[in-house]
Length: 237
Image 1 (cartoon, rainbow, N blue to C red):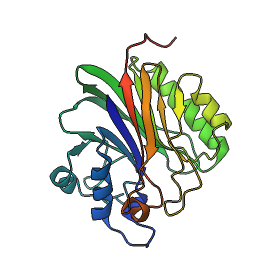
Image 2 (image 1 turned 60 degrees about the vertical axis):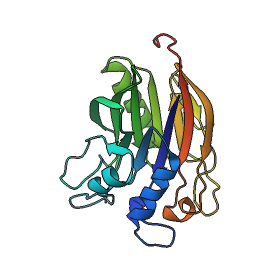
Image 3 (image 1 turned 180 degrees about the vertical axis):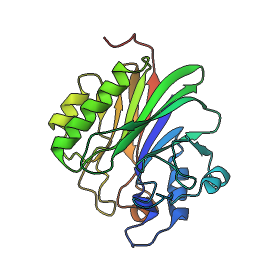
Image 4 (image 1 turned 30 degrees about the vertical axis):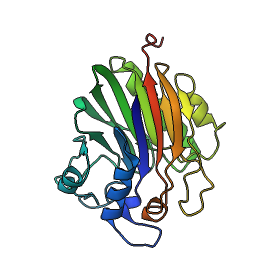
């Protein structure tokens, strides 16, 4: 069993307009995930410093960040970061460029969890539908044409409001798309923008939205999570 999570932390700025990384770390700890993807982990301009201190993550949580950062004080790539529970081995990692008018990207990490090798990719897609489709097509190509196959989980803020959107249907050619529930905006959620997407080897046992008192104020998104079982089912064709 593997518990995966995704959380757009909005640069640690809560709905009260206060930047409180301590609240963000508290919510991350509440989730009790094995792997968690973060969006908007870094500031958007300049040196793109992270709003979460790497040493604080190591000291205050059971996670370590995958080393995607290109700057000394960054945590991720275009704001995308992945935290991995201590004891899970990081085998390989990569940054993925995505087509868009604005800076966007994705990240991927290969992990070994209890003798099973898996891949986790995290993304934060465009606000514009045309570019969301281009980004998903590019991501699928890069994951499936340029890399050896592994059971794969895609997670993140897709910025897609409809489960029947064309961008979602592109993912459904290879994956099962799970919408854990309404996660945006956090005080009174109406949109299901955050999703967990799995290759056929995974079975989603449970999924949901984390709605603690701290989570409702720490960001404009609520975190989502899923518990997955991995049963090797052969490679995709």
